Image (cartoon, rainbow, N blue to C red; front, top):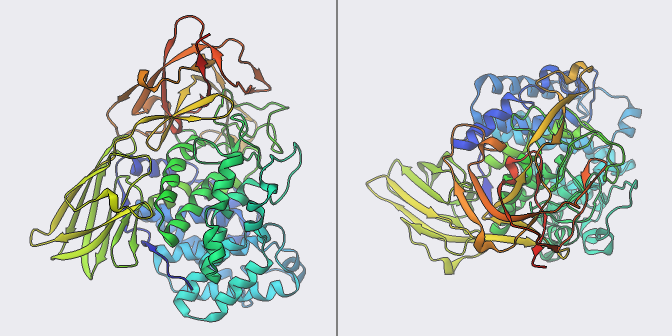
Length: 622
């Protein structure tokens, strides 16, 4: 089996600080920390001894709240998680199945949920180092191995086979039993060939309206970003290494957005800015990138992780994280329940903010995005060093060359460009440090250690940190960025700066709906948002006329329209013939003639918006 380039640190060793700590606290106080108190699919789940849904929803929720509880070091929250996991362990049957089932139920059971719970148990081990995890996975995977003798992988499990291989590889590393690698290859042999799909013309065209399929399902594709990496780990066949980023690149080409994600209002939907992207797909894309970064140590994947994390991810929630969307649009002028929306297969309520708009999978799966990102900020390297994956504020405790060390990252990145890293050690030590160099940063500077940007390899510069009798080392990193345009063939543009995408925020009227449903009582209610400010603008694409403004980053949640800490001011022209159809703004290609005097409009980070315009038609001289 291949040796991973990096290694994720155990949950709890990294502690979020600053705006990231605030964000995780908001998450815990919102749906993530409360679903098991009132939402039947978690509260009364069969996984915990109840009679409600016994398939993917409780595992999805656990997969996110486990790292969340340990990152926050919240003792009450952690104790709640331990009790839930105790129930998981106690209910496993002697034959490995997770709770009592008849033989007929086992034959009809889509094994995707077993692959998912295996990931949860592996995640719990990273938090608790509980050896019961090894016993549970041993019995569970023995059950999976027997189950696929006569009932091969099908439905969701067939398209998500690789998710179970991640804990299988860990179990092999723990036990050195070859049977786990053999089971991984069995799953691969019975699984869908994502390498062939993403190389073929099948991935290119948007799905037909009303036609749903497993291969074009957006979440399956987001998970499959890592399929070639997992296949290479199992086989070490260079074919899979050569195709490592084929899924990302092809999805970008035919369905990609400036926010780093691709369209999929349930199924792949092309590049129109009014099609949607499902929340689950955003979360799973982030996780796929985190896995690939750990395996292969490629900095461009970390660039993409930041692009998605700082833009698409926070935009899919209201700022208090009590309500979320099923679909987000990059041009989102209204969130309402209307028939005839542009979605390919989703229902009319898919872009309202609520408890479970359209379908409850995203309600269960919304917890993993922020915590798993925070747990991946730094990783150990295969030469007993450290790699900085993302520059968010945090601290971490670890051992380097058998010396206890602490790393403190003081920054307001991505809203500010300076980062200070203070490394403390109990005694003198030297170790390698891999500093990520984002592709968008042409003038990056580092002081405090040797740094030669010309030696960048796979997106990282390797340097040596030497801590002597002073027992500390301070490193300063500057990540200056330029205002740039993301252009489309339709003569439309979006504005970016560093890892941030900028949008025109639309002031909104918020209306509670579905109030007769007790589950939709505030704070976890359903809400429509209607525009009350002008949004129909074409953009002057001259970046030299654009100005950038910074405010102080406060203790408030940064990803809210009123708290946006940075802004861009740009020239724009009112475009009166830009209409709306069934609650979505129409596609508006450019160029649009400049008429009258330009208006100076304010753009803020995409992730800080609820209603927004992100892709503007270009304004040109008549």
